[in-house]
Length: 246
Ligand SMILES: [Zn+2]
Image (cartoon, rainbow, N blue to C red):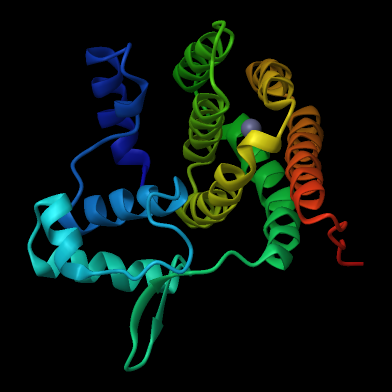
């Protein structure tokens, strides 16, 4: 996860590879972390679907890694509720609990604005320049919903990193990954992804102005509008509305 020291590395990598946005946040990471990221990505993108059996040997072959990093990654994925261990039966990709969607969003609706407030104080022009590049990419025509989601995540990662609080970053990263998995299930039913992604432009402008109150209000609205879109997509598919906790 990005830290203050890694921010420097990020800048170096960024300068080397402006066009490849996927490397923007990369820095030397351990094998176990790489295994965690890659397995989590497979789970989020539903290459490993809810209920699928998780086989260590298959993952070792796919990721070309030994047993230890895979095992470490799976332990962490179990802690983060992406996989579930059932004693004497094995390990499975966790089911998606729709009730958890509301919990995810109510937590994000508090934490994302808070991170953004910190980011207005601690972020640099370089962070906002990087975000502007991501936004320029979202504006290109013909982006598929999956690509827009990826760019959405990059925008949020820049803000989390700029908040310079690794506890906040780690928590938001996990929450985002969980909701990302739901979005991938319902992407086909979400009609207005582009509009939700467009909201980043106003958020970016407020960050550049250093206006913490405006940023917080905009991000809260943005998280809630994503929530509403996914919720209605889920509800439409299930044929029943999803209740909101009081
Ligand atoms: Zn967003």
